[in-house]
Image (cartoon, rainbow over all chains, first blue to last red; front, side, top):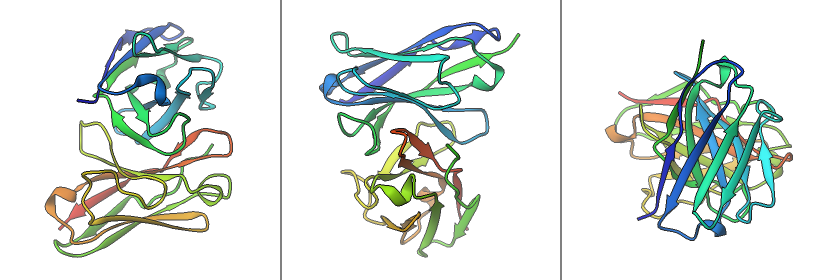
Length: 121
Length: 110
């Protein structure tokens, strides 16, 4: 069964850092791009970041560029999102999602259950 | 990158057809055949319903169809059923090699 399982969410103070992880199973992890998508409470979906299957290319939304870093360990079938200089507006449920292709663009066909990040003092 | 524009809500009676529009620019929808649509129930993860403008993943009902004209994409749900009541989001690849989502549409089955 194809599955994604996020972890690492929690409560963090403004200016703090958090690292999210996404463990993948049931598919050849290195063959697909992976994305992070977030959803603030009561709001719509916002794409955050993506990484190519090899990990050689990364992409970020303007809202997180320079503060977030995305990486992957294909030997561990795990995707990461390092979030630094966190702001209140980063509060959201963070989903990891599998892209349909090796590079992002064609849509995300598998989603995790999400992990909640709350930025508050 | 500004969000794609969707109507906030669309409603229909069981058995009817409804269409959700998604308007972008030549830098996203108009520039690529990489439009996807997602269904989301409250408290649940999104589910891919349409990819590459008009393709359905395996297991998605053929009552769902997608199309595109210029900078506007559309999702049509035919034979509306109670289980179709959910939020729907469009998404497009962009010239910045990123994704952009739509503002979301709440579908209500009357």
